[in-house]
Length: 240
Length: 263
Image 1 (cartoon, rainbow over the protein chains, first blue to last red):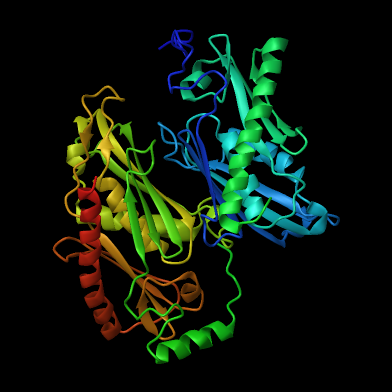
Image 2 (image 1 turned 60 degrees about the vertical axis):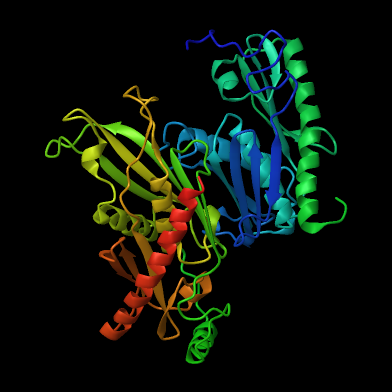
């Protein structure tokens, strides 16, 4: 199938996987899935599956990476070799390094790092099965894992993405929509205030389309936040 | 892997327990932990398995690539095994290029499967001298509470035995099941408190000495052995664990067969 041949919607405005334009894929979250970790979370987002583990706070070494006034987050995003149709060679590549960095920048914006001078907190994100949108999956899972580890945060980051395919603005692009689509706008939203800590975009969007993507994302973030809170409540009970 | 400081208290505690024929978690010498196996659990892998032994959790995924056969073996495909023990699975595993520990893990699992002959590389040939299948087995640790070896080996054989060759995607015919004859099974024994125990936890590994890995095939034949870490063992000790391995491997083989039948 060549570029431009893909039809993302049928005549009734229903996408290949049965969703409407503004509908997200199904999201399930479970925390405490890695028994040996200080905090962990598993997320299934459509066919995406990711796990996140948090270790620490622990001593940061070598000493040159220490910050005297605060902790650092050591974030790694990685795709397992069997997570995609074509096997991925193990090891970091430029894409995974960049995603690790923007994830770190997003999470460092909410974690109360000043509580732990000279320390590091390890955040490990592993994509087990990929179907477009894995960075959003990873950031969201990492937020839940940090909460599961009891790390103080001002809010949990919820990451979602809207985009465009065949000229239609769509919430939460799946694999073919992402491959053949025209734009993708992933955002990291703090649901208590609707502030942002993560933003990327590539493609082509008019200002109207951009605003619609933005609105879709903010609404979806609140839906996903409820699922994150539910996962934590199932493990710990009480109100969040 | 960072080596944590091992308190002599832990070693003394393990030795005292061993003297009473006891273990930290109440198991007897050759008891395994609770075991869960789930095959076909990864949507993008052609064969997959998740194994949980106590708090140790691993995944195995099988992928296929088309390779050019080696000039001296023009009618044979290949098997490649790689073990990734990424820092997600425990506080002591560090990022970076594969550690000697993870390379040993991958190679020992690979030898058991390869030497048992369960995969006939001749059958992986598509066009002699030009095209053959390369079977790639990726082992991935999610939670390391000890004995990654057995968990990896069990996940590996269950994933291979349920794998489908994706011939349609590569335009070389119709998809078919990968043929795997028999099921080589690994059993590992760690010297803890002066005696060998089966299926050691992370704490037992920390406070223990050498380890021995035994892979046995369907007829009880030995296909791979490996002694790891610092320590000395006697022939009598080896005979004892070999006997234990013979019966445990048969039990595990039956569990794998049960999983396949449920597919």
